[in-house]
Image 1: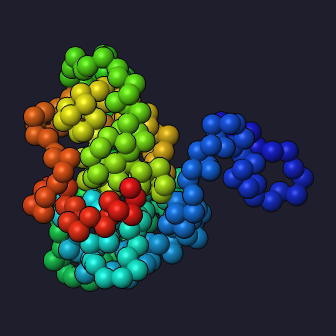
Image 2 (image 1 turned 60 degrees about the vertical axis):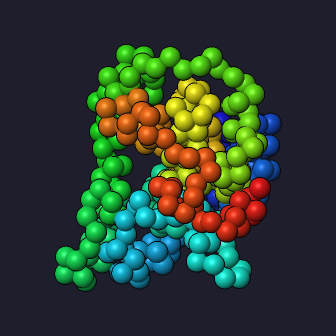
Length: 280
């Protein structure tokens, strides 16, 4: 949206110089320190995170199974001084999105960890390699499927007669004011940090669409596109098609997530309530 300022010193411009509209200013003010503290930009930060979360964590990488990670971040470890903003996964998706980290570099770093365990590691689709395969799958589909981001003339989208657009429902969902603490904490986390665990995205997208509010998936897609640091056109649309239950690769339409997950729920939410207290 913003324009590159005219300059002759060739210094990297401040973010406030690039995003100058009223809407941009309001969003930047709401981001707060947590967003920049958890995900500092640039290749140097990306490579440092890669070393910390992947290269030096051989056991973690080899045992990684995405469905077993926590939607409520790493605070599940308990104890004091818990950082509820720290992802329970690698947290590298924003760096992949902005090109700060090469997908091939990540693939080979993961492969190097696998080789250290002599092939004893988790397998796709749950493994880290599997997550990168999902990424490529959505890229291929987005290129080959017409109207990938629409529900009309899209071979990957079953037409569903969603309820009429409800401004109050959509506003409550986006702002984290639905009255469901788990859903509200996840959406407020999104506003404050620019990130949400994939299983958290499962929960809030299901709640907005087929699970509770029965609103069209494109409204949620637009919010994610605006607020997620790792928002990617191909992947964001693919995930919303998947999680709204309208794609051939979707889970069964009537398999929904509880907005009040217990200890055995598929979204793996911590049960002390501290994650909710932190964000709500």
